Length: 416
Ligand code: BGC
Image 1 (cartoon, rainbow, N blue to C red):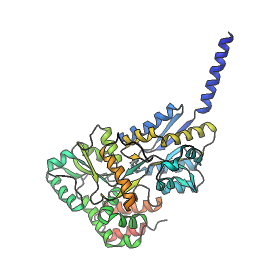
Image 2 (cartoon, rainbow, N blue to C red):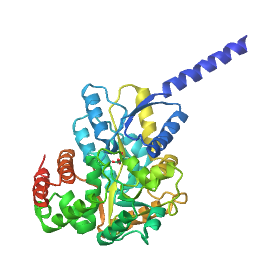
Image 3 (cartoon, rainbow, N blue to C red):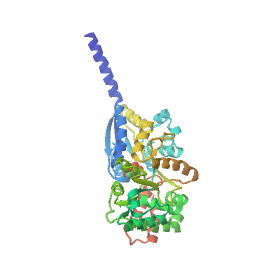
Image 4 (cartoon, protein in one colour):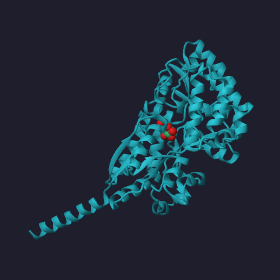
């Protein structure tokens, strides 16, 4: 009897201990495509293994505009999630509202400052304190291709500049296939546009025009040439492009309906999730004219102020897990990106990821490493939204001249 009651008491203690430790983490994200869902499932697994409850708050919509709208209403009503997928300058805007938590205790214990490139750590901090945790490094200036389609059309290799690209695109059209798989949504139009600006003007021009928003650059000859090239690409997309989701455009490349897609390396996550082999079924190369540059897009989770020890403990555990080697490897293998944590073992990564890793380091030395404007890394959300709309209107309406588009984009860049 005595023994049994002792056992019961011990069990009660254990149960109480677990209950005190276990917390719920509600995580708002927009990773709903095949490759994305597989990637985020890994974080859920790690958190559940730590005894926490994962409350999934997925808001569909590539590029995250829908998620941002939903987040606003949740925070305004005083009920923020534990973590939300927010990045770049938007982190500073949320922190300035006073709603983000200071994650320095975890950051110090886990030595984040020594594990992250300084440019990345700075974006995650507000007034010197960590308020967000980075997940990965996506490269945006990629071009994806179906190897069999290129072969069928007699295209020898991946085009290295825009002239070569249009020669290849003509051959593909002649073979009766779609040269460019495009999803006509404003953020996808902008994604293609920024790669064109980078390829036509080079990283210094890109930076002047789309990061510094320099009026001279935006209204000059190089921007004119970029817009002309961008419009020309539209002639190689199909009539059903408007409104199409990005992952469905990737599927067109997979299914040998289309040759190329301009998209960040989350597209690789789709190919991988479908069992396609890089270098064999699909090819990756920097978008034409951009091999010496790297538009970076770092996904991150901003951590919101929470009440209650259990919830705060779960949030701290989530933060530590995101920066841990286990998650950084498995997540990025699935997501198509590379780890943001420095000195990771890249043995399991494919050649596209290895090229990304090498170019990330090299372009950081040469000045070719630039933040992606289309993916929330370079400019304020207000300016980004306005430019994105102007770019998209030009793409969708052939009656808007290049000169007119240039004026509209330059005016949009002044949005505060
Ligand atoms: C995000 C990626 C995401 C993609 C499509 C990008 O802005 O950084 O993580 O996969 O949008 O939604």
